[in-house]
Amino acid sequence: MGSLLSLLSRDESNCCSYQKYDVFLDFENAQPTPDERLVYIEVQSVLEQCDIILDEIQCYKGAGKEIREAITTPTEECQLRAWKTVMPLVAKLKRFYLFSTDLERIVPMILGELCSGNSTPTQHLDSQQALVKQFAEILEFVLKFDEYKMKTPAIQNDFSYYRRTITRQRMCDNEFSRRDGKEVSNELANRMSLFYAHATPMLRALSDATSKFVCENPEIPIEQTTEMLSTMTKVCLRMLENPSLISQFEREETRLLVLRVMVGLVILYDHVHPQGVFVKGNGVDVKGCIKLLKEQPSVRSEGLLNALRYTTKHFNEESTPKYVRNLLAA
View (cartoon, rainbow, N blue to C red):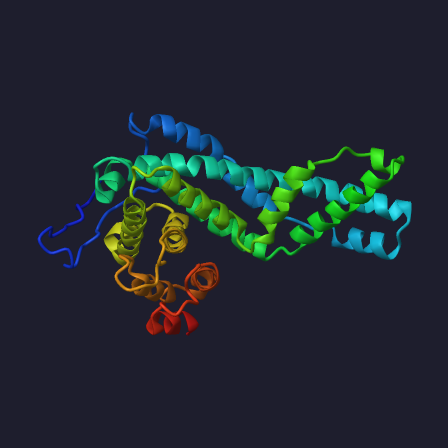
């Protein structure tokens, strides 16, 4: 496992000819080469927190009951109960936000390795599979986190209550205000508010980090970054379409990962490319991706189809072909 089954065949004399992407990316067992190791270790130290973060947001229980009681019955006892319930939740929200800043730090490191130099995207995918695997894990995490966040309105309610309460505490120096220290500074609280105001905050962090990478590395043309994203999308699609490739994975969860990563790449491409992913000739087989998703059981596909409908940047623009709109609307 981990070997390239067949190189991406490319007819250099005809750029419009059909290209086969029968590549096997080992998302289960890829190990870093010596050239990848330094970046891999740095990135892995961050990714080790992904499962913990996902478990915490999936199991997030808001303080709605305590907040309602504090508002309807504003006794010191009720307010203190609500405050003590909210504070641990704010600590979690702070960890989530700080983790997004860690992602913003490591994503350019990965992109710098996968998009720089004279190698083609195909060659990068072939020779740097450990970093490709880590990039895939980031995309999967982003999709999962944002899906849980959209299902958890208590997050914004809890943080809004915290900010209102901490503002009142600053205005009155009494025993209640001194029982707990402030969990976040004013500046951090403002940044967290902006972060959680987005329906898909981790996607926003990822797309911002990718766009910043493009802007801060003018020696790497944006085409190299978008071509890497489109090539990896095609590889995932072809792996999913080819039973002999996808069957090599030992775990069913890995097959689902490839599906999520394909969708994550489409969305990220749409946020990074100036014209988006839906315009004709962009190099991404959006129609093929959607059709493949619709062939999956709804329990697998519905959330990913919704991600394409609601978290892409250019879907509702006039440039989106009618057949794409119809496919996603059906």
